[in-house]
Amino acid sequence: MTQPAAAKAPAPARAMGSSNQHSAFKDKTKPAEIRASSITAAKAVADAVRTSLGPKGMDKMIQEPKGDVTITNDGATILQQMKLAHPAAKMLVELSKAQDAEAGDGTTSVVILAGALLDASAKLLSRGIHPTAISESFLRAGEKCSEILTDMATPVDLSDRESLLKSASTSLNSKVVHQHAGTLAATSVDAVLKVIDPAKDTNVDLKDIKIMKKLGGVVEDTELIDGVLFDQRSSSFGGPTRVDKPKIGLIQFCISPPKTDMDNQVVVSDYAAMDRVLREERQYLLNIVKQIKKSGCNVLLVQKSILRDAVSDLAHHFLAKMKIMVIKDIEREDIEYVCKSLNVRPAASLDHFTADTLATAELAEEIQTGSSKMVKITGVQNRGRTVNVLLRGSNKLVLEEADRSLHDALCVIRCLVKKRALIAGGGAPEMEMTLRLSEHSHTLTGVEAYCFRAFADALEIIPYTLAENAGLNPIVTVTELRNRHAKGEKNAGINVRRGQITNILEESVVQPLLVSVSAITLAAETVCSILKIDDVINVVN
Image 1 (spheres, one colour):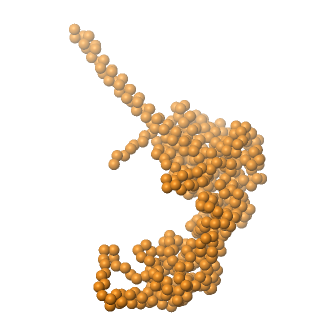
Image 2: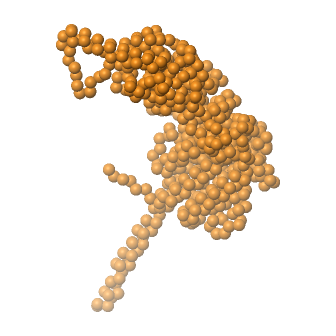
Image 3: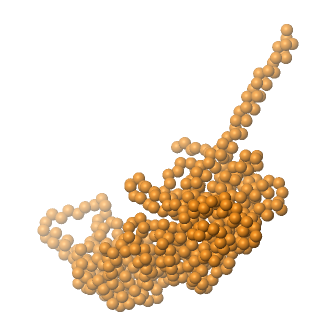
């Protein structure tokens, strides 16, 4: 009787073992599901901006909750306005921001590349290749692509204005304001060359180029101001609006009666005390104005104050009598730019406001632009390397888009200052990388060869999308482009205007080397980061 019982005893243990195996099997599927979810979310973001690539790309209309509308095809702007819930999708927004910070252009291309690489990695994962192996191979492929691009590049000299204009125009041709590419390209090239020393500078601080937007006129009216421009009008009532040979001072204190602390109040109960308060206030302001006049200053710049009026009405009256031009409400973040432009020292108190802190110029005058007035100072002595751009536009949407486009063009020229080399555009570098990487993959063995080939095929997404957005047959166009590159025509690209494959360098379609190198490197790194995620942990507050 006991024997059968002993024989039957292990049965529950076997059942428990099978349930453990079943639960372990369940856990094994979770990382794959998380990875698939991340890849799907990121690809959805890439597909959303894909139609806006290239000169014939579509524009997006972004409607904000307040009702404001933005029309643009700038990848970084579109992604920034998107409301995304998935963390992997947010990584692609960060990717476009990183490309915008590093190169300033190619924000749409970098997201499309990342989407294509994720698609390729999903196929490799379905073959059972480990995510770590794919990540490492993709990073090595990205390095190989950088080498290929450097071999293709043509060195450029910053004195070659023609090449700089071509690269800025290529960037602007894919924008909403492409018909004004000539004006904006010339403005961006001149602006950058004015703020750098081409012989020794290897970067451009775009804060030295101040863009002021004014509604009215057309984009063609955009001009580079040889001097310093202030968005504010002269605020002295009855005071001068034009000063020859001005001596300019910048103050960071207020010309208005001092106030008590927030939690105090002064109660004045009789008329004699009231008169004394007003008399003291008048004397206090008059002393400040006399001290300013004594220093020789006749154009006064006043920093904006949030606690009280920067310049009171009575102070305005005194300053106008003394024939001092006042420009008030200069933003705190603009102080550094103003100091550098005018070579003026800001005074934080009246004691420090002396003749040696002043700047000198040829002329300060109030000018009319559109429906508003601005103050323009020209002929500044010992001026710093800064420049003002007055951007015009017929309506708010055009003006905003022109501002974004000009920023991209300035960034393109900055890329050429950082890395002085140009490559062809129009999908030529991507196709050359595809062929060279495929050839290189034949020298490799095992999993790495598969990954390199998948990376190479994914790069074809750029020429494919360019052809698709231009209304061409993408398969025929990309096949012909591949054929031309296989014959050794490394600068053959898609000419979307003619609708055929031509030598794209002859069409003046060029881009900085840094834009493409940065796009490939950042896209590869982002894809590797997404592939290495195997779980999402939600934190409970």
